[in-house]
View 1 (cartoon, rainbow, N blue to C red):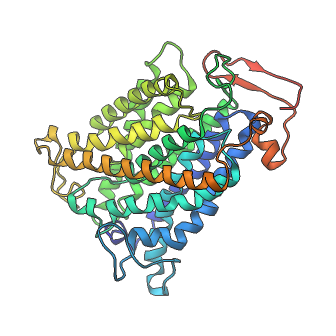
View 2: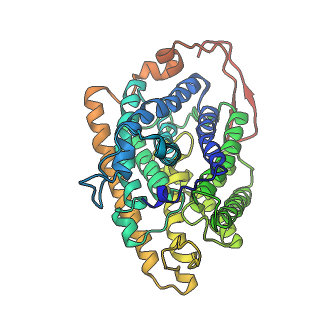
View 3: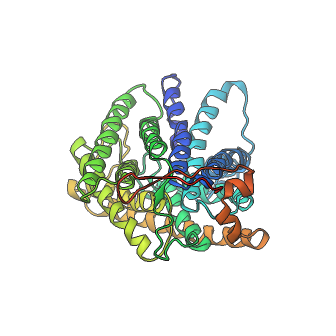
Length: 428
């Protein structure tokens, strides 16, 4: 497989993998900061489950279905390397690749947890987290495995824009629609237009910002030869994209809203992942700014059609990934050292429309796969365990009902106006 084959024997890239793992903490802080206090522990628990249940299934069959090379492997799924294990001579090569890919797999599932926060049954989510590995692992193989059919067609996706963020964003959309909005979310009461902890949400963003450098730079899989040059370029394009996203968010509205700024920056980071090692710095700035604007338009658009997403996961990951894939087909220039662009260039680089066509085809294939399979999976789970918690449990809060944690104060901040603290002596 292409990604595994590029693992270097040097050790510095190990630090990039550790940085990438910090994304789990970033998502946990961000999501717990955005939901109401009576549900913050529940969303943290779901982030733990994404690694516990999702990590188990990825070790059992996910990695093998993406990158297995045994007899029967084909352009659509891998065979072999189940229950990942190997001999001493190969363990550095295989285990390093596995841990890095596990970070991607857990991210694709964690995206969904934020979109369905405050009303999704915890037991049902545990089952979903375990089985969602199947939805992620096949697109990952299509894009990155040596035998993957999208890889053979010439898709360019360096750090997971399509198999991670598009899969996660599309799955989040289906899950949010199926489980429905939070109670009284759209009845005019503005009950849920609050953010529990602005500090946690922003700290989560900072950690994700740092972790994205690990994902993008680490996707060169080494620092030997010319790889370090691509890794350094990836670092500046990642930072510049986030700068562009932040600037666009600051000028989007009159008030400097936390949700706009956080989601604008994160959307820019999503968009840059597909071609992070191939863009020029000014292109990254522009791509990030456009992604931020698209996301900030998408957030109220979803509310207008009553799709409830407490943390903005759908605009950030779905919108950002679609634009990020298209941007590759427009801006990427042909690279001369490691052929990350696979011999193609974007429309604006006089490369014709082939690359743009492949990127668009990949969006359609992976998007339809994710939408359809998520719907089927959640429909089956709903037969066994209802996806949504009971109304009285939702009102009491998942922390109390599912984890026996009771909050005796309610201090929340409005995210659509000034940061006015509201308190209540009653039990949430």
